Length: 226
Image (cartoon, rainbow, N blue to C red; front, side, top):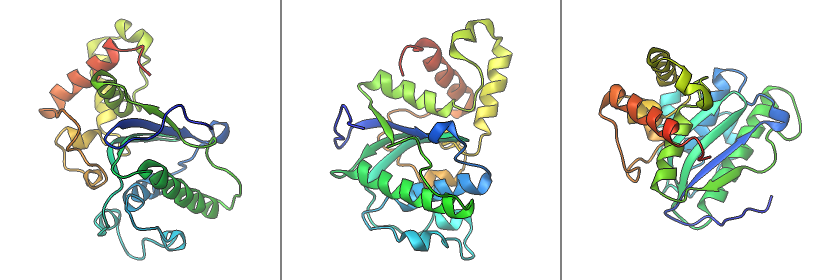
């Protein structure tokens, strides 16, 4: 796929992909956690030993792995959400070609793990990863909300017909979703904070109530932004 943009430092991008033929890419909890571990370990100027990654646990817990010392990171991950057949990242590169290098290590490492675990061969993802340049602060804040609200079933076009209580119920379901970075921003202690670099994200929430209002309002006001 020829991209319509090049990756520039200090710019934000929405990076995403799904399973080939929309197939499931995370079959159980250990698959989600392996991808999260790779988000942390692949984000380093050092090369990744892919064979070693297949045996990365060796008595380590998930939290242990997210505390392994790394060399300098090459991208900033501002938000993430993993769904059963696709993933979303809000990402910015810190060095030239940082996003491309990071994604190559991430995807290669995960496909090796997945194919070995499930005794399969061939591609797992639907071609190369997709990306969109975040053009302004409005778009950035929308994507931040869009990514974190992926677990919510409510369709944007029908929100006007849904009660406030139902919207709140769905929001708190998203808040409990374990494979999203939303809790990091709602001032909850979460090991995923070690994956993120939040210094350049220009807003924070004062607890879950304010976060609920902010996230939902941006999706509701900007349904045309993708």
